[in-house]
Length: 299
Image (cartoon, rainbow, N blue to C red; front, side, top):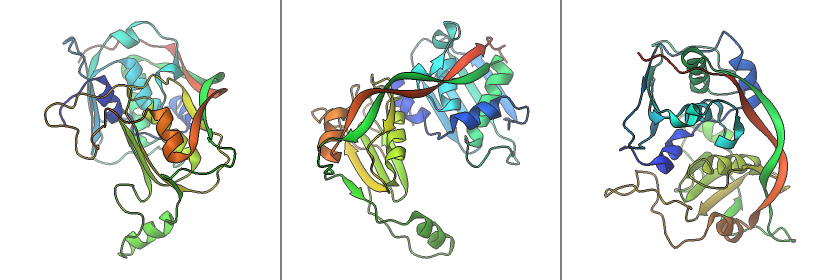
């Protein structure tokens, strides 16, 4: 996929799901899994182009700031990174890393992904990054029912999919069953102007929306679930983002639906399509505090 401006890069950037507490424990350990080879070079082109790709055994980031790398490693938003010198935003880097041929061990099953831990190790080794996490009371958006009778919108439906059974059937060669495309059967697909999710809890939907706010939105707040809705749901949300990415003459990449420039805002779409609303509140937010960091040496 051709590089795009910062908005689209944010979409590629964030696909990691992490438990911050587990991240904090892991990042202080010498047992973090590590890339086999890492190249870090300054990017002085000044063209504003940013890409972050993690495919197969390779991780490639172009024109990225250290703040963006920390976001990628710890699955946080910009405002959740506290401290550090000015250059963590202004200096840009090109990163190329390769995993060992033998998959490393060390990623806890209920914590950050192995790739996340490897990026954390790279930041420790090459940027001398030392961090700790804190929980602070900050502005958040809470997802709450929009109506007193708690009526759900037409695009929010109770899920009838048994993802565990689907997984077992796939392993046994049975036929796949579930809700039709474009909504994923089990999981979520998030991008500029859409959130498609199948068999997701409201907490998982809130997490998906939080990832979405990293892709060019000015919401700049963590989104938490306070709906009181239990169980799993199928969700189809379409809206017009605040900043429509310039995908070029070929249009959006495969898998990203066209954006209607005259569609509803995120706030309006959540209310009209899902029967929910984003309510400005305060709540506990985990932040990553930078204790120490150094500019990397070029290789």
